Length: 416
Image (cartoon, rainbow, N blue to C red; front, top):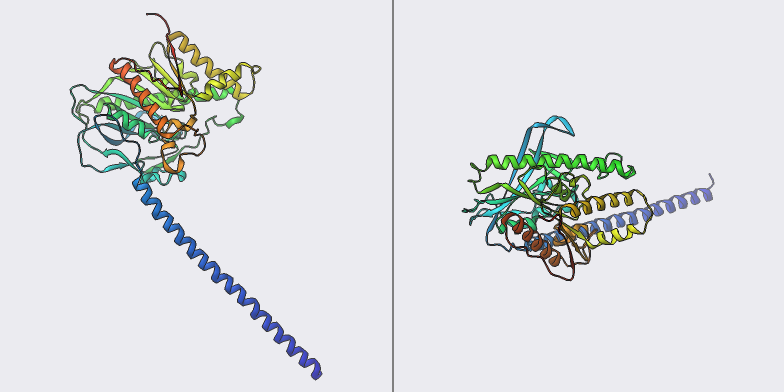
C-alpha cells in the first residue's frame, strides 16, 4: 500500500471511530432522558394515587334518611335441589348481601365492595365507605321488618344500588340483594371468582331475531325468579336463629334495576308472599305473565315515553329493536290496563342514573347518565320507592311525588 493510501485509510478509520462515538453519545443521552421521564411519570402517578385515595376516603354516599342505623352482612347460599346451568356438575349457588335496620354498633364501617369482586373499571370502589356497619346486630322491634328482594342489572352487581338499599333499611326494611353467577359482572363464590360472560341478547348476540332474544330473556327470568324464591326460603329458615324472628318473610316485595327490575315483576303471581314490585328502567316481556292484581310500579326515563310515540309513526314490524320495543310496550300496557299500577317517567335521566353510578366520583358523567343532577335522581328514587312499599306493605296512605321533572301515570285497573 502506498503511503498516501495508508494515510487515507487511517484518516477514514479515525473518522468512523469518531462517528461511532458521536452516535453512541446521543443514544446514551436519550436513554438517560427516558429514565428521568419514567421516574417523573411514576412520581406523578404516585402523587395522583395518594391524592385519589385521600379524596375517595373523604367521599361518602348520601346519608340514609330513616330513624334506624344500618347493618350489612353477606351470605353464600347453595340450593342442593338445582344444578348450576353453566356448570351442571355443581349446585346452584348465589351470593346475597343484606342491608337491615341495626342496633347501635361499633363494628367496622362496610366498604362499598369487596376487592375480589371489583371490576377493572371500578377498582376504586373497595376504598369507598358506606353508611352500614358490618354484621351489626339487627335492631329489636315489636313488628317484624318486611323483606325486599333486589336484583341488579344484567352484568351488574348486588352493590350497584347501595344508596337506595341503605335508605330503605334505615326506614325499617331488610333488603336482600342477589348476585346471580354467570350473569353478575364478577362475584366471589366460596373463593372462586365467576365473571358474567353471556351477552344480554343470548348466545348468538345481537344477530338473534327478536323472538329468540325474548325467549332467551324469559328463560333467564325464570332462573332469576327461582334464585329469588330460594333466597326467600333460606331467609325464612334462618329467621328464628340468625335474625331473632325480626324478618317478615310472609309479606315481601321486590325491586330491581333493568333486568333485575324485570325479574322483580316476574315474581308477581308466582308466590303469594310477593305482595308488590318496582322495576327501575327495565324491559319486561314474560315478566308480566303471572301478574294479576299485585301492585306494580315501573319507573322509566323520559326517553321510554318518547320511544313509544316514535314507534307509532314507524312501519311494522320494523327492525329487531322496533320489534323488541313494541313487544315490551304491549306487555306493560296490557297488564296495566287489566290490573292497574303506576308508571313514572323522569326527565333528564338515562339508564344508569337508576343505579349508584351518578353518585360515584369518577363515574358521574360517563356513558348512559343524563343531565339530571345526581342528588335529584337520588331523591326521586328514594322518595318514590319508599312511599310505594310503605303503601303496599304497611298500608300507609299513598304519597305521590309532585315535581315538574316527573310524570306519573296511575292506571286504575278493574273496579273492586
